[in-house]
Image 1 (cartoon, rainbow, N blue to C red):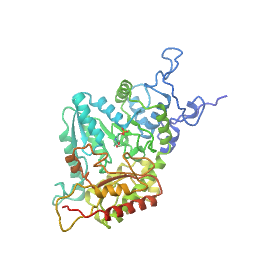
Image 2: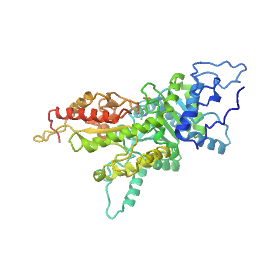
Image 3: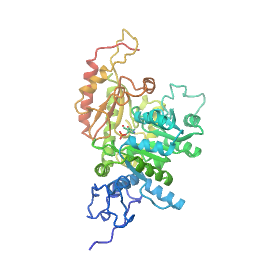
Length: 494
Ligand code: PLP
């Protein structure tokens, strides 16, 4: 005899992040076998018995394994509770989870741009956006649908060096308010009557610059324009943009969500019922669906997301601190980008503002965990905020001939090729550590003038810090840095 199904907690926000990661989508009473993990359902079609009487008809439109993943994602991004509230307020029927799983992060970006911007619309995008996203906006949506994009600096970076510096008599609080207003002014000045979407990514790739989500959400709300946040780098464990006011969240599941470098996937989450049904329609029409096997792997991966991202973050902070506290004074490293890094007395104002922003973007569960580990906003050295770190390696300079800066990647390539544990590879977010040279690899397609404006030069290295024993990672970095810098013959530059 089967017992009564236990209450389904799928929409309960009172359960913790990992409890939901493990149980939502995997409820045994929803499975024919009562398995504690969802079945891998490979069927492409379903016997209907009576026409239209079954939940599933054809696997491109919906599939049981994909549905389990979508319920899990919607719960983890905090979208299911918001959707339920919106459906109730609008008197609408529940048509499924607040998340869609797609075949890649890029397919998710394309779906959101097509669904929201349509034809001849305009996008206001963060300048330091993933290269594939700017490629889709400027080389695909522009040609196929007449979409235009304005790229805007949405960060606090460089407030000392770009005329955004202090004004006489201004208090610290007044200056912060002015800096916020300057971001609002830059974004609002780019909005036209045709603007249909505000797009941002935070932290950005590869400079790990922070974008103020709440501030953008307030502009989006005032102007009635949806705000989409690409949450790939933070992952839903560290930041939940819908809870900070975003309308839509997209992500590449290929990275932290999958976490083992063995699945290409993407997802879209929204609590807006109209957008959700538009996205579902477009996904079915375009067909960018993940395989059930990939969905099954992602369900499995999400169950350990919290554990993995906590360790990625703790290792990421240790690597950032090593580069800043050992690499910079030893003349091996010029500067380090890491959102939680506290540089103490040498911290600039914009670095402090970014660190404060990073702390304010931490989800309640991540903040609680890191506080339990003894971290706080002002911890000496900083607090954990993901596994992504980038830094400029310091090439030796010929002091006698301070001539033009070289575009040589000799030192950075020697460093990357000398690493033993960090694999020289693109991508990020897997359990294993990776290192790359954005200028020649992930960002080779970005316009060189835009690249140099952003600081992506021959010396910029990006690390995806894995969850190996951190002492081994630090030893690998130090050995390869010392070998690369000392064996590069001095070159001339400004
Ligand atoms: N968004 C960001 C921030 C990324 O870094 C990437 C890929 O690197 C994508 C989207 C695209 O994801 P995918 O490679 O799964 O298509």
